[in-house]
Length: 160
Ligand code: FES
Ligand code: FES
Image 1 (cartoon, helix red, strand yellow):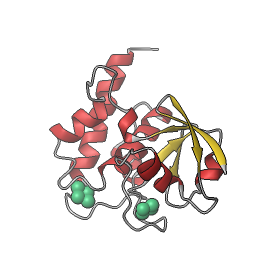
Image 2 (tube, helix red, strand yellow):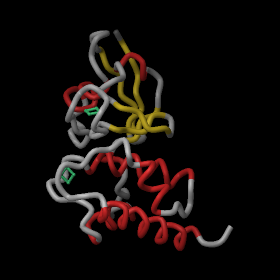
Image 3 (cartoon, rainbow, N blue to C red):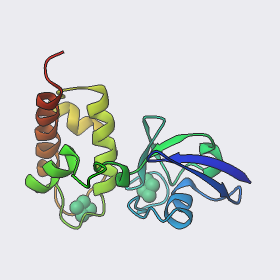
């Protein structure tokens, strides 16, 4: 089937089998391997991407279901000049990653949260990231990172 996806601002026309998952289309057809596949059945959150601004498990969605959508993957977080997003900087500074396998999904979920809430408390951050599993680094550094990034982004945005 012919579909059209806009990924990180770039439009792509793809010819995919109806059974192809969005995760496979992103990784194998578009070469965007930053979207990771862990469980492949909706449990770990590693494959989380934003579709039309909302978080979706790319392993559970068929590429054809995303036809016409605007998708953000972890590759779309950095600036055009290569500068890291405040969340990416904060994950590095606050030891929010070890092996990094869960990190793209964590970043996508955290980005969604910070789009909706400017300064979420630690409990809210934990709640919002509860669908993302990290097997190695522990969650304290991840929560620290999201909290720090929220503060940084609030400063950048300034008072309303
Ligand atoms: Fe999609 Fe685990 S790979 S939720
Ligand atoms: Fe290794 Fe989270 S940093 S799974």
